Length: 117
Image (cartoon, rainbow, N blue to C red; front, side):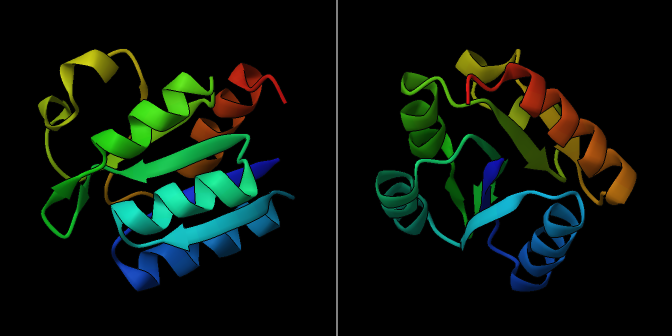
């Protein structure tokens, strides 16, 4: 499955990419900004996404809106409280930071079950 990773911390995005590869998935990105993520969505059509809620002070809401309109399942990664996620996405999967391979694998498994791809 093609999974978009949106993460502003380069080392974390690299780690996520490695883990996704280990799980047999294809990494889309990573994107480190909202603009990069929106461009990747247009050119790479991900089947699912892992979104850092806060990208250098900018919320990922615009990315999530585009993904939701395309029925792309997503999980929100945050080191903050769940209330950092916009109310309209309150029922979405979350991934608490710091995370480990097992927690990422669990969330990716849930994303796969929700993906139409």
